Length: 86
Image (cartoon, rainbow, N blue to C red; front, top):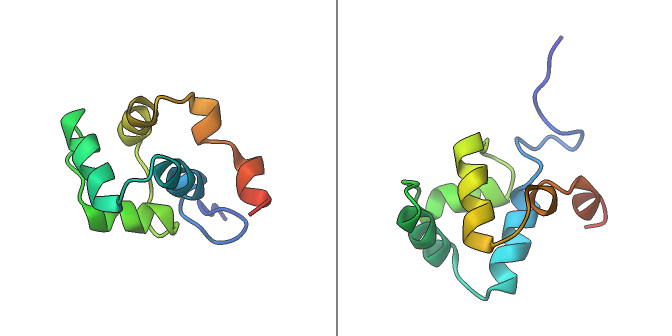
């Protein structure tokens, strides 16, 4: 049987990293949603919250936008070792 969740039951591997990079920039979830909209991704504060807590899947298009907004690499965004240490 195919299960598309992480070992700890999350729907994504980058949500904790998104929360980390957002707080490092000292911006709110609403401000992050606004920045995502500026790069062409229609997302709201509630979707950001659901991504960060692992309740929502993240599309490849959104991953590209997060990398642009945070000015980081894909490897940094998808680093699962950072998540395992949390």
